[in-house]
Image 1 (spheres, one colour):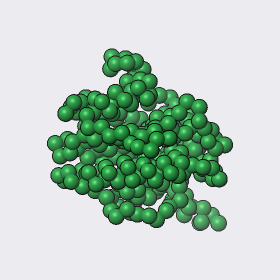
Image 2 (cartoon, helix red, strand yellow):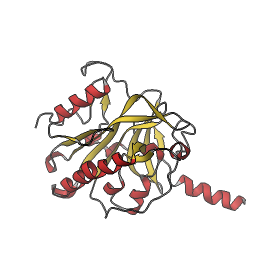
Image 3 (cartoon, one colour):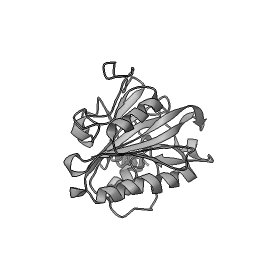
Image 4 (cartoon, helix red, strand yellow):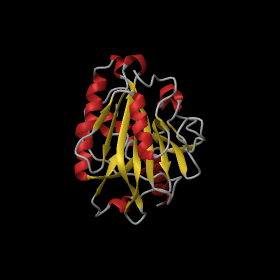
Length: 258
């Protein structure tokens, strides 16, 4: 029994994220090494408010290798966003893996029981179909990379957004870009025994510098159609309205209007 416990512990250690300060160990997953910024006021002169004490910055790992980064809200028990570098993807893997919890967060995260017998799926932020390898696919199956989605919305988000982004990036030189995918929390809707917040909107944005122009999508949980954005300033303006605070997704060095 002791040997089995040791083996299970070692396997678990290879498949957990690491809570770090300001993403210091995984800034490579952000364009210009700059995570998204959220401000308390209407312009960039106001104080940055995220991450706060209720948020955890996680370098997401599998088999002791980092694959993406997540800002996680331990009160709402959903991610604010996950960020990763898109480097091409393997064929869309339909194999399902077990969803795991992050040992460092304990009861500050959603659990699999919250989703059992509910009307919600665990919606990936860093999606399986953007992962470049089997190991990267498995890295996405952490509950800190998931937020509640109804089944129909989950399917629409894949077909209308995730797959469109994937097909677009295939046409970019070097097939690379930086992607951030996030959720806007609803004010009142909860699910599960842990009172997990259900997002009102999902969003995603990509940029590859000179290799690939900016693109972004926003879709409400009760909407049948996504909204596509080709200008970063318009995308960030809409996100700022939804979050009710100024949002900057990519580094200031990225052009806002081209």
